[in-house]
Amino acid sequence: MSSPADTPPGGAVRQASLREINLALLLGRIAAAPRPPSRADLAGATGLTRATVSAVVDDLIGGGLVTEAEPAPRTGAGRPARGLRLAGHGPAGLGLEINVDYLAVCVLDLAGAVRHRTVHRADLRPLSPTETLARVAELARRARTDAEAQGLTLAGAALAVPGLVDAGGVVRLAPNLGWREVDVPTLLAAHPPLTGAVPGLPALVVENEANLAALGELHAGEPGVTDFLYVSGEVGIGAGIVLNGALYRGARGFSGEIGHLPVHPEGRPCRCGGRGCLEPYAGQEAILAAAGLTGADVAGDAVRLARLATGGDAATLAALAGAGTALGVAVAGVVNLLDLDTVVLGGGYAPLARWLTPPVTTELSRRVLAAPWSPVTVRPALLGGDAAVIGAAGSVVRRVVARPTAWLARAG
Image (cartoon, rainbow, N blue to C red; front, side, top):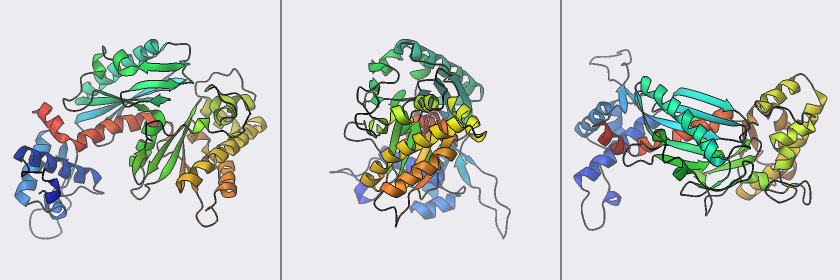
């Protein structure tokens, strides 16, 4: 059913447009429901007739987007209603992540289950962008093969990159990778796993890794949490800002570069060319150096630091305390500016949250003006270090939910 606001100027809604609206409406309701709704539930919630709901649901089931759940035990007369849930077969999202010391890939089905996950750990800084992206394409090829063996079809892909990414997918600057003006979609155009998307949906979306991680956390968390700062701590430090349940990208899409907020003006030099930025004090390499682990293998460094801290290593504990203090100074400025009530520690910070949270909380209590009346919650990411790659795959899945007609046209 459409409202007057849905009607284009100068005419009624075309039948095809009405069908598209109803498909997206009902699929979105099924996706957001806390329990599998029945056809009658959907009719009552949307105002659509039962006949319309039944016809649209049949299309969604036939297209592999929705499946019927087993009916609940009967409590009265009549046949028990079957609930509807997103299907675990059919379309899936491919998520990819490039970071300084690893590559990651995952496949997420429409129901939100991870069906494939691979992490390849290596220092990528000696590689050119072309070499790095060739490795990404190979991981994508293997993931696609595995997904197809499970009866899934990739509906598209999203790639998370730690840097400034414009709307066209060009990485304008990724200082920790040494990338500048890298046209990622063009370099990946020859690789079939990243070009065979559903018509009407983009084959590949390139986005900042902290932004995709923040979106992953938003959809993994409790429905009422709609405003938070997600801080991703790897070799570099990025942030995703969620306001009123939506990602804030800024005027040019470059928001969230918290790693380059100054915490010690005229302090240590940073790879960005500035001095005193947060990264040289709270990035993983800085923490390793402060803990006396300079030259250590970067692969799995957060897990190694957590192990040392658990064992009571004094140098590691001091390094984490110092990093947490610097991080708290930077985060307090963002919280004062945007009036956020939650800070999520993600990426490499997630396994270290036990030791980072106290100094971060201390600085927030000291520096956030509203802290006496409204303390800021600091917690580890629900998705841990996988938030960016899961968020990337989830963004593909959500595009299918938002535009089911594109998938149904292909499936039909």
